[in-house]
Length: 130
Image 1 (cartoon, rainbow, N blue to C red):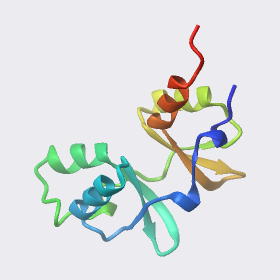
Image 2: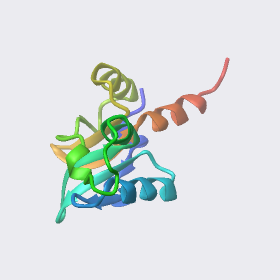
Image 3: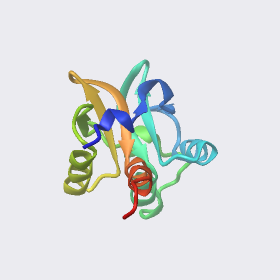
Image 4: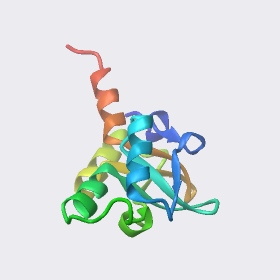
């Protein structure tokens, strides 16, 4: 089976947002980059992840003000991770068990990438059909 590292987004390509950024600004960043998540930083450290689902459930659904709510207030932390040599099936299973659509990818415990449900779908749609 194919390892996670073959389909992950490498850390160098992460789109990040500072923890004090308001949710509306973060949502616009996601829209402009056509992505469903941002990594939340404090200085150079990644401290969490914010997803479009976090925004819907933790801001929109409760009627919070997206211009006054920071990404740190609604981010998911710590980031659930999987080692880069695990298989895409392992990633799928972990996402299903954890009810998540994004996983950090680690190498010897250090965050080196991210894989999403979208990445798994791309892989599956490119498999040869019988």
